[in-house]
Length: 372
Ligand code: C2O
Image (tube, rainbow, N blue to C red; front, side, top):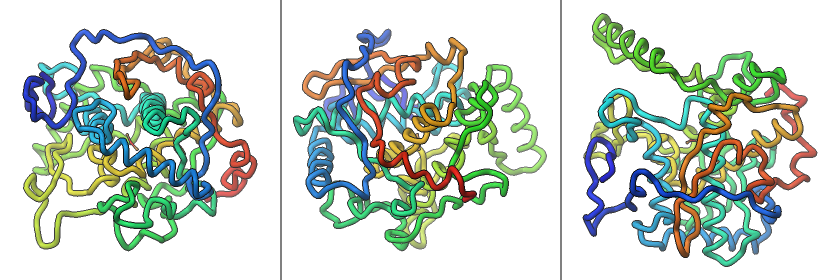
């Protein structure tokens, strides 16, 4: 069984919505670096007609896989949900210790792994091993709207109904969350040392002690104020995660429960780690954001910024073996899904993963010289 949202999902249930987690301990093969760079990720707003059709076809095929297939679109969305908003317990007996791939130095490498396997699966579904995940180029003036490809019709597999409708063709608001004035909305290079890495990639996940202290602190605040105190997790986020990335999530997702209703489980609310229901839809809420195909192209751009940071701006990752050797298991291979164990050190150079970003788009980076 698998603990999701404190409910035991029995893997023997033939009607289960999602694939079973691999048996524990996981018997996974180790990731092997790809021999060649075959996939070049391009900006979504500049794709040829033919490429757009390819992308749609691949997503349509992924959506057509049965939800119980580990590489189905439903399963991909569920993977993201499982790793946030307190759904996944590091240790089921420690009720208050959710494991999350956000708010820390896990963010960049985990999401790189996640969309890597997603991209490969899409390519396999259309029999094209050069298929690369297009990225939403929101840091370039021409990319600062939701790419038309994602919004051209209701029948479009890249369309998602849970987006904030009025903004569909509006200029993005990279400052939707009102960042402090001194913070660049598009993260850039800091000092080329561990401090710079922490500023950009985030801090190490709180230690047990930190975690306990925070819990105690919150509980006493709650008692005093009679109000639910939210844990401030933004401090451990790097700028890559904290700035435009988060703003665009919230900007895209349709917010609020259906008209005239309050937000509960019955009105589509998702239970958050703070114990409250959240009615921000799809992109607007971590737990549901993998349900919008735009999520993956959004994250391809976040990934691209990390790539630029490390290949062009002199940024370096952490030397800490705890980070380098951290590993996750993902399913690989649509035809014959099998768990693959991949470490952070395997993903620091995208060439290891067989992809890169189009060189053209790196020539003109307006944000490097302008303050946004
Ligand atoms: Cu896992 Cu943009 O979040």
